Length: 280
Image (cartoon, rainbow, N blue to C red; front, side):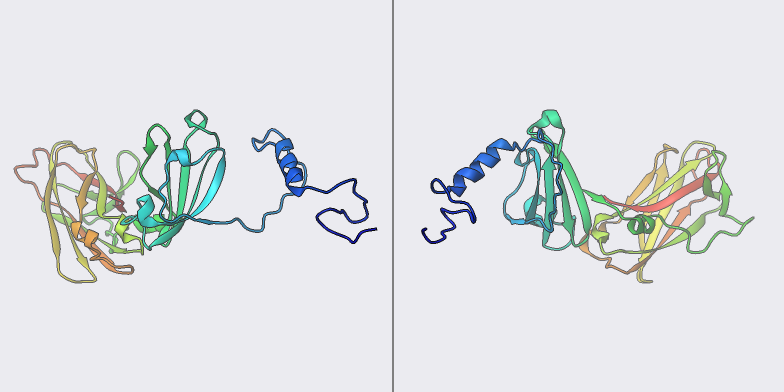
């Protein structure tokens, strides 16, 4: 009997001819289609998945068909520079079907400043990146007054006529409320201060927003006159886009409802519902 040769013998079995492993693997692949039409009843174990280093290759929704891919990317390659922090990320991308008829393709980028998601179609391309917020980050967006209003004094915490909790500014002289906010690591994504308010009597009213960073110089964003009392007012704090605010900085905002003037044709009570930071 000839010596054992793994290319031509299966241990314990005398072959009738050479065993061609390439043909066996090709036969198995042909017999087991990859479209999910053959159910799997055994146990699948996958201790890890390979991440492909294609850092310089941009993707489109057409890059994915009936599967999921793991890629190592430069933020600049996929349009996340200036949105996420760091240089590199891991991208998980995929699509359930081979074209737009089966739904949109998606990508999730795991970056130094959190997870970002986008989706799109072959016909229309990718939509914008949007951050997936954690509970902690969401809590940091909504601000509460640094000094809670005293009952019976103005401004006062009340339940507005619509049933929502609010800070009430009555008619008369200028009144203010102060908010403190700590900037998280991904501050670059939130250049807007936004408040939601309503004038009980309708008509115009005026507001002013100022802020200080770590107790520094006062930045006055000026006055704004409201003409649509149900629409939120947004003040864009442009210096933040130049990294003036660092992680951990304390930003003190002062929101003022200005006293009656010519622009306030019907001042009424102002109900301030929320004050928050919002991505620009």
